[in-house]
Amino acid sequence: MPVESHRVSPWFLALLTITVAGAVLTVIATPSDRARGVSVLLTAGIVLLVLGGWAVSLCLHEFGHAAVAYRSGDRSVRAKGYLTLDIRRYTDLGLSFVLPIVILLVGGIPLPGGAVWINHGAIRSRGARSLVSLAGPATNLVLGALLTAAVAIVQMPIGLAVGLSCLAFIQVIAFVLNILPVPGLDGFGVLEPFLSLPARVLAAKLRPWAPLVLFLLIIGVPGVSAVFFQFGAAVFAAVGGDAELAFAGYGELLFWR
Image (tube, rainbow, N blue to C red; front, top):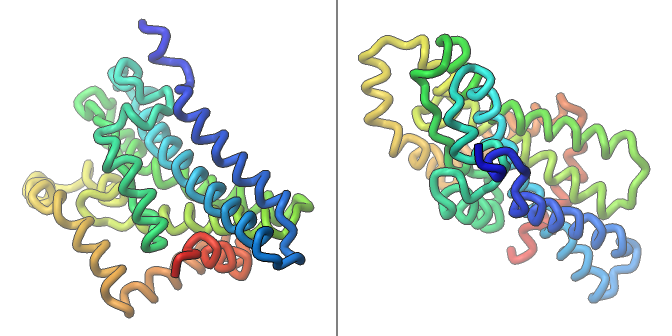
């Protein structure tokens, strides 16, 4: 077994370092002093914290899929490097990493990244295959809950609280988006093992286009967008999130608007 097949990737550690660097910048910046230089420093810190944290969560999301698949019988995920948290190992670097980062920065929507290739024939049961799909979005929800708990429990500078709350809200929105029962998203993958063959065949035909249509509806139809974010905000509140802090973080993340 190659050594690199089970070591944590230095690329993941680099993304984690960027996230921590952003957090440090938010601490250094003083929100009460709105001088231009300090304001720019705070914005830069929040952007690095949120984008870096989102990239880290993309790796953890796919690791969640792979880890459950490995424990359920698919040993191939280890040889493919999926357990190293290396973003380059997933289907396509552009779709897995670059596009989700750009979409988040431009549109504020946490678009799901690329997927890991699972050998479903090696998975022991339909229930296990369902859990493999559930593991990714569940990872986002757990991350969101942990971040909101940290903000609520730990005394921290307001800039850091704003950045972490924004990142937590993004994790919750990613969960809500990805858990929808739409072909191509994990929510449909949770149901798919229990569907009839004709339903799965139809879903396979819709899979390349359905997520794109959903994304266009969210960004292009105000009513759809409002319902989506309202539901996401309700889930965020349910896990203890502070919407005021999160939206303040969004304002800093989308500084160009």
